[in-house]
Image (tube, rainbow, N blue to C red; front, side, top):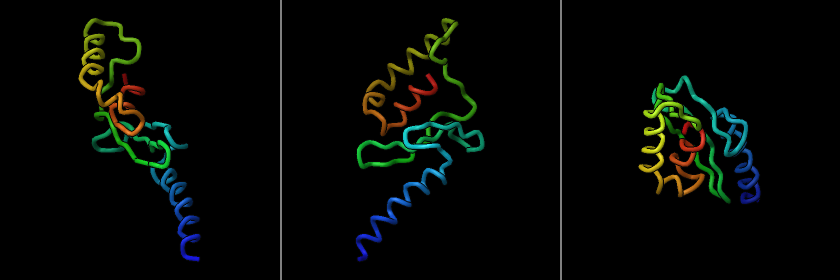
Length: 103
């Protein structure tokens, strides 16, 4: 009896987590302009694992996916080289989401 209640309640907790964080679903990044230090948040889900990830320095823009100047191209290349191992870890790492949404 107690176990079935816990499973049901656990499912409700996941939906309330999405609502509390303010994202529309799992693996959907969102800007957080009011957060003091981090610019984005995502509730990452891989298999059964669910994790809230905050990433990106507040107030700093990436070079974007289409950098125009040589300086922006260099910043983008440096970021990808510096974080390549962490980006390769997949959806459960902040570097993956920063690479996907900011760079």
